[in-house]
Amino acid sequence: MMSRVLVDFKATVLEFSRSPSAIFWTLAFPVILMLLFGAIYSGGGGGTYNLYVQDFDESPESIAFLDNMTGTGLVNIVKVNTSSDAAQVISDNSLTSFLIIHAGFGAGLNNTENVTLEFRMDEGSQAALTNYNVVKAVAEQMNLKAQNVTSLISLDVKPLVSDQFKFLDFFLPGVLALTIMNSTVNYMVFTIVEYRNRGIFRKMMTTPLKRPEWLASRILWQMVLGFISLLLIMGIGVYIFDVVVTINLMTLALILAGTALFTAMGMAVAGLIKDEQGAGALAGAVTFPMMFLAGIFFPLEMMPEYLQTIAKAIPLTYLADGLRDSMIYDNMGGALENLIIVSGLALVFAALGTALTRWKQE
Image 1 (cartoon, helix red, strand yellow):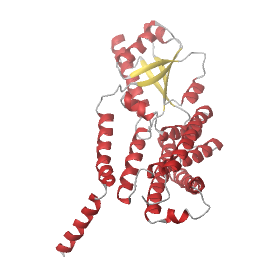
Image 2 (image 1 turned 30 degrees about the vertical axis):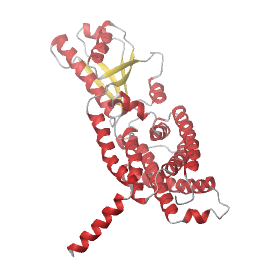
Image 3 (image 1 turned 135 degrees about the vertical axis):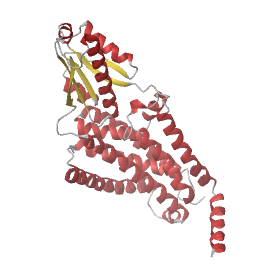
Image 4 (image 1 turned 120 degrees about the horizontal axis):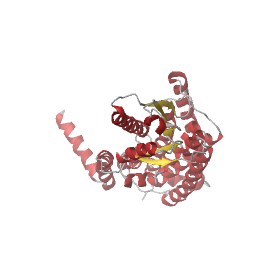
């Protein structure tokens, strides 16, 4: 029995060794992951989070408070005009945290009276949690300097959007975007490689069906699967975890555009691989970095600046941001911008995928 196992093992090794692309992508995949996570967690980046602040006091004390936060090296203060509506600023910029310093902050400190800072946050965001800890630490530091007590400056923490929202609500749009990307790219890569190697494409060349038309039919099918995924994710979220998100026309448009984009991307990726051995490794090498760089699991602010730059060039970033804008923040302006980017990328990859895909075995 062992001899038969060894013979089959040897045959598998020989088959694998005959595919340079399979060898490359199989070895490249763990290297990419290690470099990716190493860069994220090595501390090589700025690690600075933006904190939007509305200072209605504008006193030396409030200015000193903000300077102390900047001095930690963990936050970057973004001043918001006091004439602006806080809720609108949060919605327009899809923020995860927002600090309000009310008038009388400095006078209260000088008179050793209790003062309160209003801090609005998405409790499921790492960036918001970091900003909260910085605000809290600086407040405690100023309390000790003022009169060696811990209750002079207090924090009034409020939900960022509404009491009804929780972490899973903010996470769900990212899961939907991730599902669309994974299912479409993997489906297209494996389907095209299989069709090409089995000679199915060669037979399709004898029919009136053209490559753009075949791509359109694949996009249509993946759109159906995308809406099924939406129903499943929403059903589980609503009936099991009580999530509260909004489904509107912008959300549906983003799902359609995202499905078209990643179906076309899968077609383009498949044009770079000729055998089934390397198909899975190549698909993983393409989708996994996007999964971790698109801000779904890790906030972009915690990454090195060069990774943040790369993240801004990743299609999944715009689909996930657009879905959050439409489903959570009700930021239709931001959702529209992301929709335009996703749609434009879909056209680019459709042209690229059609050009790279040949309906013959080379």
